[in-house]
Length: 145
Image (cartoon, rainbow, N blue to C red; front, side):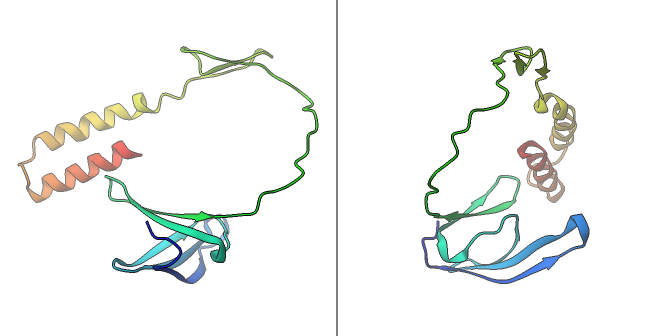
């Protein structure tokens, strides 16, 4: 966690063509070093109040910028044109009052077979071997996303 000092964002540039266009920048953190970032949103650097760095078990590093903005006044209080009731359930995610329904996504069940295969191959590796550590990293990547 870095307050308003101890970090600096520099070398912001556009990379890629068409739909694959991204903004990249270099972030310098005191006592750690440099990171190359992919910036997903525009934000004013002068209003950043904190920078937080997170390391996931999969090895991915996320940098979170906390930006303070002034409160917006005068939000519109227009009545909605169409109102729909929502019923949340167990077998279906949601049932709407107009007859439509949303199915439960169940992302865990879709990825369980791959996790089983990766766990089985990890169990056959020798403890603390180089290939075992690689396999453990692959397993962490697939379970964290």
